[in-house]
Image (cartoon, rainbow, N blue to C red):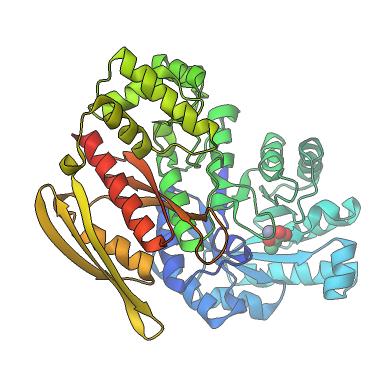
Length: 499
Ligand code: KIV
Ligand code: ZN
């Protein structure tokens, strides 16, 4: 297949319908700029009739004059359509349910009434000279003859794009292929698909639709969306580019940064094993794999997709399954050159930790190596923590101060934050001087024991400006102290790598 498929991103509309997610107008604008930089063809910015804030957000986005076309959602009513027109969108996406179950139980109308409303809505949009995308909601559970009648009628009324939503994600790829073929048999307008992920088949169904001739696909970043979400943007685009050899206008090198931005603003964590953008996608731990990767990366990676293509980084990770070659490489990268005997001892310690069920962080590896090799005494570490104090309460802004020796010089830093941990971590960053560009990448707290005096384990990952990541841990009853210790230890690990 050598053709270009249009990418319609609905992160700001269906993605925002993810339970627990709501973006401010400013968040939406930031995200719209990022989606534009990513190169999506259409950004569905929101549902303007739903609230004043939503309408203002859509207006802000259309006002930004991005290269991507901006779309607004509307039911098949004039007030909804007018709200979109007020926002000056490029495309109006009008939708109505067509399956009997939804027509009867959600809007209480007959098939004939739905048909008439659909045609009138499309005519109204076209009378205003705006591009019209029509969705038959729950299309995949709609009586086929009726669905084809609706699509033919709205096309005749002027619809520019016909969307086929698999609203509750019940399709399977082989059926989706035939479904789209059948619709293409009677509709000339470009076909778009919108697949939900209730059975985890959103991307597979989207790709099957493209195989059957769909020219546009609706996707979200990080698979956000109602219930189990929508077909994922990164998975769909990379499958099209790397496997199907179908082009899109997406600049794939921005996929990971886009996913991280959406993760931060939505508050929905990306699992480490999420395809394309997850932390583990180009991380290798087991001995056989890391050995292969160190010789030739396509031994245990797809080859047709490299970390550079998606803005990711390849990482060798230590752990129970780690091999000698990988551990040696990691230590060499940190400037440590163990003898064969020392390496064997380091390996043994790592495996012992793994057998006890411990996740081995990078800082654990460096500490083990330093102890075995006798290389670095504690006093030579870049940061030696001396004091941490925190003030917090319901009437005071959480404030933390840190006393430490940084590269041999005494330093004191203080900061406020949204909570005591945030304040303490910010205070550490104030004493870093020329290393202030170090960013917090990962922060996890787990209670190891129960009760209010529980031992809390904190695992922190930090990243320097070159994208090097080092992880470290600490465990204490006091989560503030554990957090600061883990952060300092991770920064020390990063400095060790730099040296
Ligand atoms: O899932 C769905 O059917 C929708 C429509 C508005 C297209 O989100
Ligand atoms: Zn949807």
